[in-house]
Length: 222
Image (cartoon, rainbow, N blue to C red; front, side, top):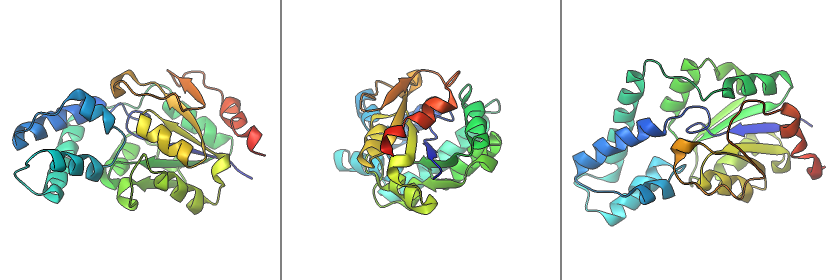
C-alpha cells in the first residue's frame, strides 16, 4: 500500500509568518486592540475562525467576527501579492518532487483558505505534485483537532498509520499525533517559540532529508 506525506503550508512550504504578522498588526490597529506575541504564537496553525473567535471573546471588537475574517483574508492576499520575490522554503520543492518520483501520495492540509493555498501552489509551480489539498474551510474543527488530517486519510484511502505529516507548529503536531500519524517537526525560526516535542523527528532544514528516512518512519506500522 502506498504511503502519504501530508504537508502543512504556512511555515513549511512558504515562510509566511512575516506576512501574517504584518497583516495582523494592521488588523489590530484597525480594530483598536493590543495582542501579545505569546497569544499569537499559541494560536499558530489554527484557522482564522478559531483565532478571531477567541479574540472576539476577549476584546470588544467593533465589527462582527465573519466581517473581521473577510477583512483579514482580503488584506492578507493584498500583502501576499505585493511579495513579488516570494519563494518557497529552501529545498522543500526538491523534497516534494523527490517524494512524487518515489510514488508517495502527497497532500496539503492547511488551516489557510483555498484562495491562499491555490495562489501559493501556483506561484511555486507545485500544484501538479499534490493529489489532494484540504483547507481549514473544509473542516468543522481546526488544528489541534485531527479532523483535517483524518479527512486526508479518508479521501486518499490511506490508513493514518501510513501517513506522515510535516508541521511547524505545536497545534499542527498535536493534530497529527491525535490522528495517529507519524510527524516530522520542522523548526522554522520564524514560527515563534513552538513546542514540537511530540513530533517523531525534528529537522531544521529540508536540505538532505532522505526519502527513505520518511518512508521508514512508518515501518513499525506494518
